[in-house]
Image 1 (spheres, rainbow, N blue to C red):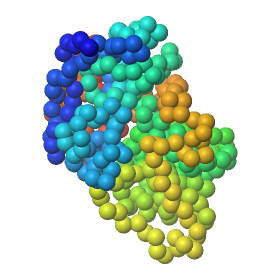
Image 2 (image 1 turned 90 degrees about the vertical axis):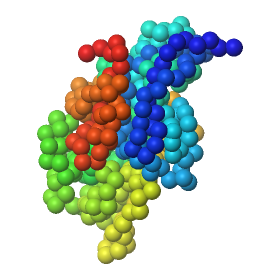
Image 3 (image 1 turned 120 degrees about the vertical axis):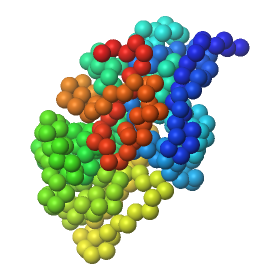
Image 4 (image 1 turned 180 degrees about the vertical axis):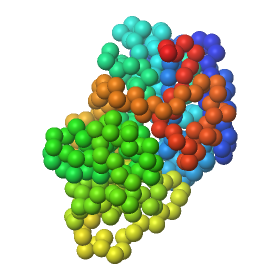
Length: 331
């Protein structure tokens, strides 16, 4: 028998473009579990926009479940996967530690100790909310297989695109160009050590291209930037939206490759050695660079989420990563 630890609150997506904060039960931790009080969570704008708008395809309702999701698609669902909190009870090896977990937006919760990754001392708790996005970028780099000296183009300057470009630029000798419609991304690209171009000026003849914009125009830009025989790694997820891809003209004669990348699985050639835990630990450890704080563009109180989410998830909003602050979060 478990006992209730008191009140906890969670964000639920309750209908098409509707959400609410509701009280939820929270059991005391048992052996091998921890009780976590959330400090920060992060909004994954791409995926959570589709959840908010009810655009998760029925065929993907099971595959797209978040690790600790409650409820079922389309609604109501408690959804999210970027949580940083402090362990306040349970496993003595973790009590008092700040941990990252793939838990939704909730103030207090219990989960298995093995599902928490301690945040290293060199990574501030706020920046650690980027771990899930960094994990996606790692998966894309594995799928793209960049090499030293490659000229790499990333089309789409959202958080995942920026982190993918950031990782690619750390490979010796690479030249990485971020392509985005928003000219204000140029300063951010420079701070991360990247070149920048607007779509009409995107470089051609690239050795590797990543596409993250989730738009048909962005995909066309990515294919045009690819050099002959090059792979375009498609990282965008379009939900129920049908996408027109320009696969005529010179797509075949240039022997281009359009390759899907998805963080929900580990690349086949790594599955015998890599676990999800190992990949997530790597993602957290790669967040030591203070320049990455520039990706945390907006801050919002947890209790303000129902009012603020429609704007934060609006595609036209100039939002990168929205940091959700909970009671007791450090400044």
